[in-house]
Amino acid sequence: MPVLDLTPDGHSEFPGLSRNITVHSIAAIPHRIPTQAAAGPGVDPAVLALMKAHPALGTLSDQDRRALAQSSKFRFQKRQDVICRQGEPASSVVLVLDGYVKLSVSLADGGEVFIDIARPGDCLNEMLALRVRTHDASVTALSPCRLLLIEAQRFRQAFHQNTEGLLAILRLTDDRLQRLTEQLVDSRARTAPARLAKALLRLTRLPSIGTAEGTCLPLRISQGELSIMAGMSREIVNKHLGAWRDAGWIEMSGGTVASVDVMALSGVSGDDIDFDIESIPYLRPARTGASHDRADVFRTLS
Image 1 (cartoon, one colour):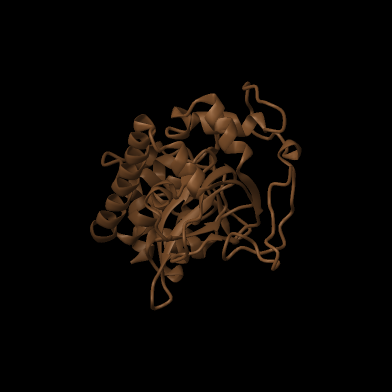
Image 2 (image 1 turned 120 degrees about the vertical axis):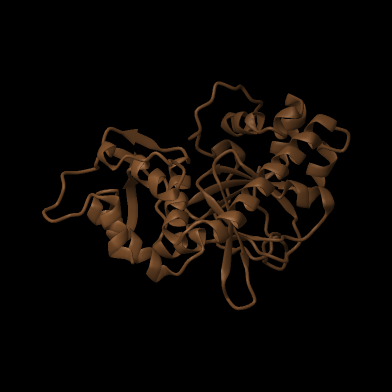
């Protein structure tokens, strides 16, 4: 069964998306998400397991979830592909199966305001689909992604009389509003290095690999993306990253942050008031002449 149909005029039924997209059958999708769930013919059991784990989709019956999956479409996106555009109709609810996507708002002056990062298992546009509204933010792939697109009308039908599911969507929406409120307060109350440190710490909370040498970031984002997340210029981001690299608090690779010292950055962000610089487990041996004192690092940034 094809999972992506092109309209007769040759355009994708999802505005803003490229037509050069691979078409697969549901049965052919690789099982990259571990699962023990069973599924009917033609439905990826890993997808059903991810749907069941979602707070709202998990309230549906197994039969309704399977029907929703069978009527949905898979989409593969490359890094930096625009998945949904601000101002366009919200025609689908997006379930992230693999990869990471960014939600952001474009400003009239060409600037961009960071909203959130969605990880595997997260849903986007649930409330927009229920209220039949346009996108209030753009969604962009931060890495290669595999997505499940659930048609908005079918989503509304599935939750029409599902009180528990609607309450779950409200709770998810409230959680997002709380994060946005926190970001707004941080933009006024925290210093530039504190905001940047908090943005990096946020990346460490994505599914990652922890080692004795530090926390490896699962998502490598550019310094430009970091500047959007932290709400500052790229020049300021470069300045702080350079000082933190020299102090041994972060490790760079290919122009992106590869791993971080969580304890050190927690002290910079202000989340650890009793921060003790002597307790930092450095990522690598100290370089000759490198400053490991936090006060010295901040003096280099003044």
